[in-house]
Image (cartoon, rainbow, N blue to C red):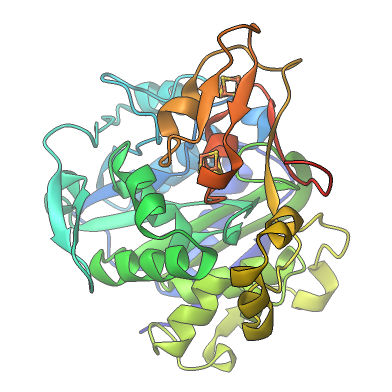
Length: 370
Ligand code: SF4
Ligand code: SF4
């Protein structure tokens, strides 16, 4: 597989500048022929929030990409599916709906008659549009993820799984390694053709939904999801071998046999790494001796990062309750906007933090009490 990755410095959400960078990146990566092709753009919409929060792919990147694809002769569609996916959902708050309307690009509802694909182990529901288009362009946002540390090309594929089916996977894959293996399985089964990461302003801290915008100043493209994730996670200051999805894909020999195979086109990486990027602390839970102790001493569970609910910010919207795959959360019947967690049920999937739009869920270590 093509292992080219192109990175261009880009500091402004200016449609012309972004468009020229996309053209340059695509040429450098030898992206697939677009003439007369039907192309699905798959942004990261997550919970659909205002562009300045940097939770979602910025609408200017989508607008510039649409312009590029259409000029190359493609017919363009766009779609994504948030975890809480209501009928008729459109990404209005993120500004993506507006650019689709202006560009005359249809929004595809992934919840409408979804299909099914086989995975290494089992099968899963998937947006049926993947069978109707020639090419899929994934457009992730550069940001952290509490569960898999970093969300890039491999993680963005999860949005092709409609609505609540995503949360069910957390119940089936209850730890970081298992969930990461599932994500890699999914990417093995769904072929995507190009990845363009919006890293103009990324998100540091508790991603994917509760972090803070930070200027990262890059656009990155590749036809290779692993190669893109390796370069992007380096920009955020991670060791790519610490990112479980990258490590698992590499061990399987998917897309790359070694990180050294990446053909990189861009400024010297060490000169643009954001060393002060607030990363998710890398857990040592993979260590066998730690696992051994952990299985026997329940109090060590208190060392884990967990969701903590802030009643001052909580609106009582109940989105976290709907998404929780373990039914670990309820509203306190006596105190308004007070969410109660049954900690022993919680598998630390952090879906509650992902869907909360009110900054009412933080991920913390809580050493005292439960
Ligand atoms: S914690 Fe967040 S998602 Fe849950 S009810 Fe409160 S505001 Fe809604
Ligand atoms: S409480 Fe939050 S982190 Fe725990 S299982 Fe439910 S959604 Fe996942």
